[in-house]
Length: 245
Ligand SMILES: Cc1cc2nc3c(=O)[nH]c(=O)nc-3n(C[C@H](O)[C@H](O)[C@H](O)COP(=O)(O)O)c2cc1C
Image 1 (cartoon, rainbow, N blue to C red):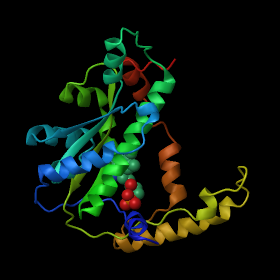
Image 2: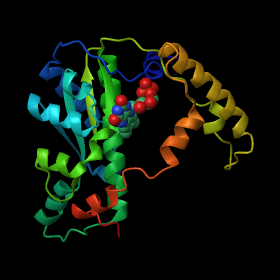
Image 3: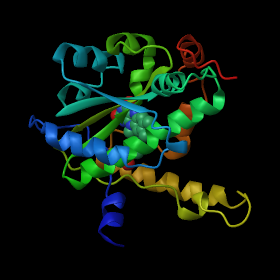
Image 4: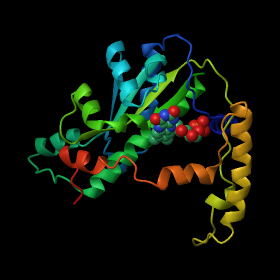
């Protein structure tokens, strides 16, 4: 492994931060690293909004289900998928924006994820910790209102970053054979690997939480995909112009 690989393999989400602020110049460097990520057809669909106002951050922490680190992290960013800018560019050339294409929605959302992950790696390389906050989609309408988002932009996730005040263990991942296939998809052998992973993750939770959390991956997946998840998202996306044609 080289240094970059070691850095990538050492990622863990940070949810406790020292009060030390993150310098504006460092945040700008991190965002430039985000901009350097590959982007579908040079679409550059990411807009990042840094939220500084303590009251607004408090409100966002509440909307995200009481995730206090949204307020306490050195900085809080919201990553938005933005087709508003490319629409304007199209119109500047006298074109008509093809509103509501599913493909445009996919490429904009993928762009945001790649941009943000570059930011995550850049931040971690500078000694910062990060945590993505999907919880902002609990109430995306209110989030959009707080951020004054116009049509054709939606908030994909929030992003806490700051100096870590904790040093959690790296969370184990699925065995390689479960995620890396040769030539064609086949999952006959996956249950064995998944069971092994269940045990590994159970051990991770037990040791990390002093025995208070007793869970494993399959149980987490039951909780996640065994029920509807943020069913308001479809209508919300429609309401801001992502009608999915
Ligand atoms: C898009 C996205 C949204 C997430 N949302 C939250 C969140 O709202 N709150 C939280 O504490 N962690 C959140 N996470 C962090 C994941 O829980 C975490 O990455 C995962 O459990 C693996 O742990 P690790 O990052 O420590 O390796 C999110 C991660 C991603 C990629």
